Amino acid sequence: MSDTAYRAAAPDYLHAALILGSFALFATAHLVHYPVALMSVLGVAAVVREPARLREPGVRTLLLLFACIWLPMLAALPDAVAPTRTQKTVLLYLHLLPAAIYLAGACARPEVLRLVTQGVVVLVVFAGLDAFAQLIWHEDFFGYPYEDGILKGLFYPKQRLGLFLALFAPLVIDVVRAWCRQYPPLWLLHLPLLIVVLVSLKRSAWLMLGVGLFGYAFVVRRAHDGRPALRAWHVLLLVAIAGVAVATNPPLRNQIATSAGLFSGDAAAFDRASAYRLTLWRDGLAMFADNWLNGVGPRGYRSAYAEYAAADDFWLERSGGHGQTHPHQMTIEVAAECGVIGLAGLAMFYVVAFGAWRRLAGQPSSPVWMLCALVAWFPLNAHLAFYGSYWSTLVWMLLAIALARLPQTPPEQLRQAA
Image 1 (tube, helix red, strand yellow):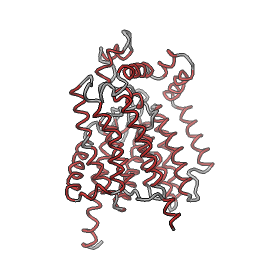
Image 2 (spheres, rainbow, N blue to C red):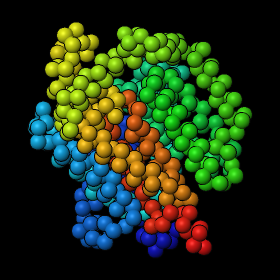
Image 3 (tube, rainbow, N blue to C red):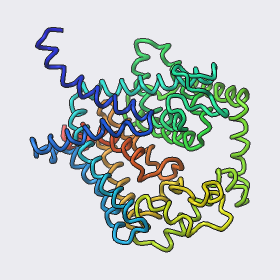
Image 4 (tube, helix red, strand yellow):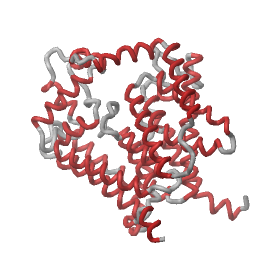
């Protein structure tokens, strides 16, 4: 590469390095917030330098989506049960918008989008192989142990591995399908990822994986590229791998056996089988009933928990009287903390997001990025906090990358005009 070509390509590589570094740091507890803060500063600078950027289709859609989530948070402030914490949450949430604007601008450059897409897939595949090594040798590449029958891999000691692998499964499948045109054996990269998601013992990850695979089949069908998402023998092999994983992994067998209580029809059995989630959901719905308009305030669930919990509440006893930080069900969390206003905003968010997803048809990789964002905020998800900074940061990064190349006109109208 000549000096001129190198200088021309250098900005693309710098953008991609910052974005990929941010994704890599999700394996840590808090370090991801530093590069995201830098992206926020860069986003503000970009808008100040070029105000016209706010009129781009992807950025306009980002602004609308952000308003759907943030304005209900603001409306919950006046009578929040934990004013200081809610104020901090609402104000700090704002920095995600300029960070998303920066990401949308950077990934509007085709080479940056290509580098980020393939780089994220490499990171996810590496995380899966690292966890697979942990499963086999009871220690991953970095010395993190396999404890209590739960794979945690690079996310040790947090139990987030399965969530991330399941979330990015559609993107991995999409990129590996392209790689397989030249190197067909690379299809085998899917196998350790499937095993790790199963053995992570996160039922919420299993749900996300199922939703993501179903959504990806829809994306492929809309693309009309003539290639099935998975061939019949692929499906049979995946089923066989899943069966072997169940047969040979006692913790996984126990988790599946415990999950049978979810279908027992008995409330107490359901509560135990759901890891006492039913208790959290009841308390969250009680908060919603008492604060139906604007909720108890973002991140206020933890402060109101003791007031709504029973005297013998499992979580109160386990935590020494503090209870849980969030209800582990995204729709209930929105209802409890932002009320009907929050639910209306969330419904509008889905309407706008699905409309954008439709307009992204035909764009390289962008529909799959949007699918990952929708899977992350699937209404039935029962894992990390909806208003928590960790998961919110991830979702807005996904949305920004997805919308970076949003066209002005839906592809159907473009075809009709032609």
